[in-house]
Length: 409
View 1 (cartoon, rainbow, N blue to C red):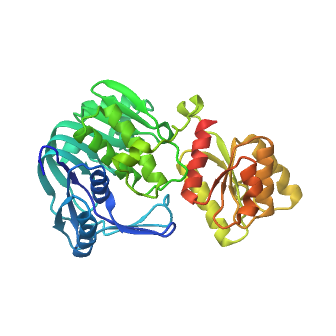
View 2: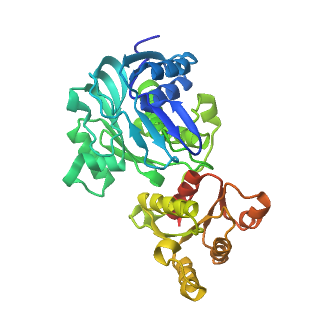
């Protein structure tokens, strides 16, 4: 294996558990990135921490690829436990003090890790800090690169600047490039895709719409695909970011599976439409329709409402904003709220009469409706499907389709 063509990945191997959809795997940022690159026929080596069980588990996966695996043994491999793909995970084994991994290489992809640190000396490097609280600059621990690309989400980018932050993403990217001596800065912006700063030139690439969304690890996949295209294939930062965006859409649609070059060449999805209002920071209000008469129903309503708010939307929830009451107390308030909101997310499992009525009312006034239903028979979904509702049987996909419709209108 030629060292000149090799990409060195340094990142976590973590145990990831998700209750629904069911998922139990040893991957993490580093493991996932290495697998994604290997699937794209990019020569790759992975440096990671792992305990004996995690190392053995991932070694079985790596054995099916060309990944060269280098493990630093630690007592306990951290774990991330999710209720669903958009829930805040419970994190285990994060309070560890392990010696840093030190690597000298030509091309590197470095991730932030919770169980240790990585000191990288590379000619060219891609850095994804993966820290929603206190991201550290690439050079803070002594890492060096002749040419550096930062891959950040918008929250991380703004955290780096602290009180100096601005809502102007282009200005943020320019400032980060100057302060962190980065040639390239990629800022991921949800439905708006990504802003690409490349040595003073600014461009954007779209996010791509998918039928389903597998969220866990999608950011790892984006960073890996960008690194492969930019470091190995020699694409420009703009071209690499666009390819990474499309490959991440493939990952999301195929339940966390990695795109090969052949599969990606045949994968076509439309860009997500984003309105000028959304780009200016305006956020429409979503009506959340769903029954709330027992604990499971209330839990789902609360999860949907909290997740939509966390993703920047305004939400009207009959339970939270009107409450229980007689027909005289609640019906007109709910119908007026449907008229004054922009779209509706319907939680229809159980076929609650009120939820079905609200869904039909919204479609009658031509509001977009996203329907989340896992359990109902196709016959009971017929009117919703036939009236143009966006149908999904996956909770995370329902949330994303709602955000995408909100961004479009």
